Image 1 (spheres, rainbow, N blue to C red):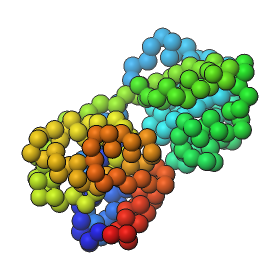
Image 2: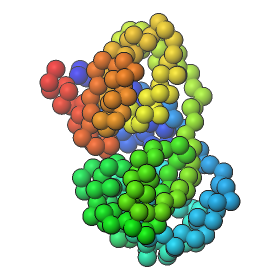
Image 3: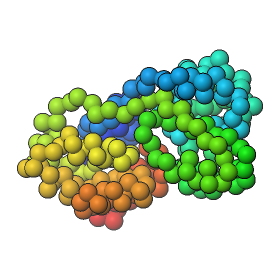
Image 4: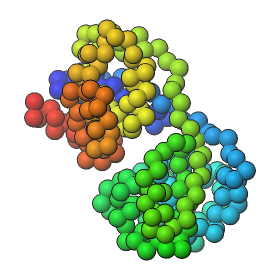
Length: 255
């Protein structure tokens, strides 16, 4: 990848700056184009009940940094309760965010950073009679909850944020695609990939879009990208910014 090549960063604006800085340290250009906006979700009476009764759960699972950042202000009066509960973070960034908020003894899966990795944890093997609260955004995967229930657990959700498509001008990105000027597109979720297609829906750039390398964070997102029609898909070892940069560098070395 030549110096100065353009890397499209699609993360929400409040989460992209570290990635952009790492890209620029390599001598590349970070092109900021958020395809997701994270907004607080109005809570239902049932959501409020889950917060008030959070100490009744044996396990509280935070699926993302966004889940932590939106949930902890809502349960600020219950932080002491979290110290007595098995709190599980899906990934290193979520673990660090909980630690920063004063939540100690947080568990994190050792074999990956997804629902499958949580289910593989020793603490998740005997779930008969256990209760779990999954804190997440609206409309996430059902895989984790379904499998915990199969193992005998009671599972509730606390959905504290929602993902929307931001209002933005895609004209410049369209020009980059017409001239095949993007070296790679960074994609962090299936929702981001679907939104990218909606925001760049013009037929005259679709072919070039599908031939632009996309860097994704999981096999699941890779499978979606392949199904959509992307031709060059790269998978990072994990969802961290450092892993994304390393994946780009490896691809560069392999030509």
